[in-house]
Length: 113
Length: 115
Image 1 (cartoon, one colour):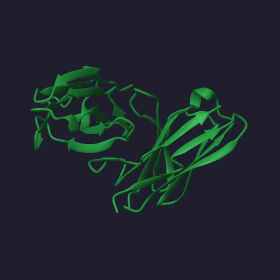
Image 2: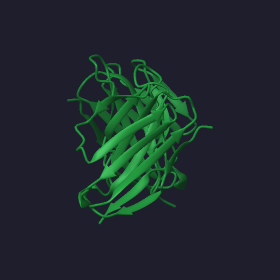
Image 3: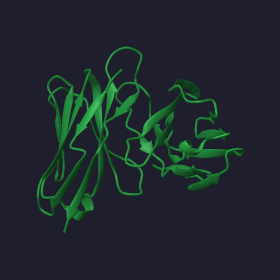
Image 4: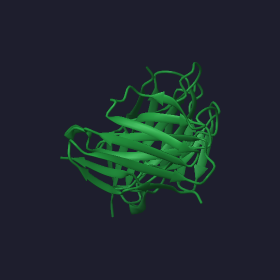
């Protein structure tokens, strides 16, 4: 079945440093979504990427979708303490009858003020 | 209204109890989902309802029984659970389950403890 690998599992940074998390899928994806889950909270949708090579920005967050639609990254510039949480990528499989989202294991980001 | 509301927020139940989790959304979404999330793990899909019909069952044990009474409501009936079923149960909805409009809105979850 489809697998979505995400690295790193944990990342601890000083406030103001940059942060990047990476996702790789074993199969070509129809789209990829990113979610953020604060400690004790629920996943909150951040963004969806659909096109090959797509790049989207949300303030300090930059999201990329690979040309082959099998990998993606989330980069945060100049982290703040409010960025703390677990960032999940979730891929939607392309083709076949299986349209379920497959979540990566997530990257837990902690920020030292 | 962009919320998915889940009740109860916390639930403690014995292994012989029967209980139900409830989920409601008023965004007109036609796909609704149950996920199970253990601590420090990603959400794990259990069921998908599309247009009030069960679309995906991820080989979930029969002690979990989903129900979709109408397009706004989703229930999860629990019976004879095991302690290892203790987890955060998340409901989510999206405009559709296929194609582009699949971004999911999650409820705050029900934290279930089975004793």
